Amino acid sequence: MRNLYTLLLGVALLTSSGLFAQSNKDIAVEKALKAITLMDSGYYDQSIEMLRECIKLDPDNYDYPYEIGYAYYSKRDYNTAIRTLEKLKNHKDVTDQCYQLIGNAYDILGDTTNAFATYAEGIDKFPESGKLYLEYGNVYWGLERYSDALPYYEVGIEVDPQFPSNYYRAAILYCSSNNIIWGLMYGEIFMNLERNSDRTREISERMFNAYQEAIVFGDTSVSVNLCSNTLYLDDKGIKEMKKGIMPFCFEYGAAHSVAVAMTDTLTLASLVRLRASVLDYWFQGDFAKHHDIALIKFQKELKDLGHYDAYNYWLFMMGDPDGFDAWVSRNQSIFDSFANYFNPHPFEFSNKEAFHASDYR
Image (tube, rainbow, N blue to C red; front, side, top):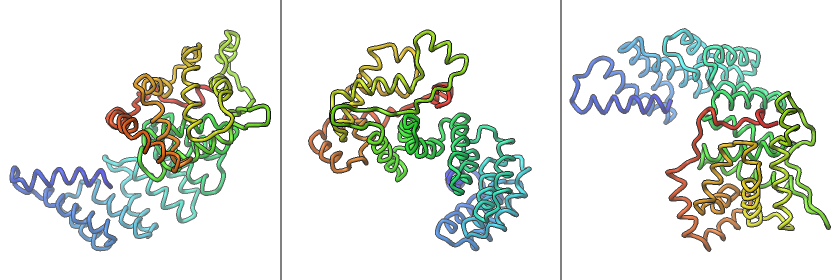
C-alpha cells in the first residue's frame, strides 16, 4: 500500500501543479489519496466507499480494488477480503501481494490448506517472490513446525536475496540450532539490509547470545561449536576435500578457534576483538581463496578503512547495550566516522553474489 501511496502522490502533485487538466483518472488519484489517509486512520468503511468511487472513474485500474481488499483485511473482515481479492487474480497488473494477502487471510481464518494453495499458486505466477516463500514458511512457523518452515525461508533467500524478511526468520532458527554459523551469516546480512528496526535490534541480541552459546570456556580449555560435526558432501565437496579444502563452516570455525585463544571470556569488547582476529586469520591464509563470500569481503573493506571495530560494536550492540553506550561515549569520533561512511556505503551485492548456506555446507 505504501508503494501505491507514493505513486499516487507523485501523480497528484503533477495534477495540482496545473500542468495537466484533470481527467477522471486524475480525480480518482486524488480520491484514492484521501481514501488511503482514511484507511490509515482506521476509517475503513469510508475509505472503501471512496475507493469504489475511484473504480467508477478508472475501472481498469488494479490498485483501487486491491486497496478495497486491503481495507477489508485491515478491518478483519477476512472472508470479504478474500472474495474481493480473488477477483483480481487474472488482472493484467496483479502482483504477488495479492496472493500474499489472500493466503494470509486464509491462514488467519485457520484454513491452512487454502493458504498453502494460494501461496503455491502465487509462486507459480511469481517464482521469484520472496514474500510468498516467507508466508509459506510463516504458516509452518505458526504451527511450530520450524523444520518445515526453514526450507521455505531459504528458498526465499535464494530467489529474492534482497528481501530481508527471509533472512530474519532463518537467522532466528539457525541461532537456536547446532548450526549457529548460518544464523550469524544470515543475521548479519539481515541487519545490513534492514538497519534500524525492532527486528534489527532483536537479531543483534540473538547473534550475541548465539556466540555465547557457541564459545564455551572451561577451566583449562575452550570449545568453539559454530556448526554440526556432521559432514554432507556432494561430488564437488569430495573433490575439494581431496585438495585440502574443508567446508566453509569448518574453516570459519577453525579461524575462530585460533582467535579465541587470545581471550578467556566473551563480552561485547572481547567479541569485537575476536572477530577482528578471525578476519585477519581468514585473509592471511587460503580461506578467502577457498570461499569467495561477499559479506566477508565487505568486512575486510571496513577493516581496511578502520571501521571494523565500530561496525562490530553496532552489529552486536544489543548483546550489551550499556557496554555499547559506554564504548560510544569514549569513542564518539570513531563511531561518527564509521556512521558517516556506513550510511552512504551499505553492504551491496548482486543476486549472483548472494550468500546461501546450501552452497557452503
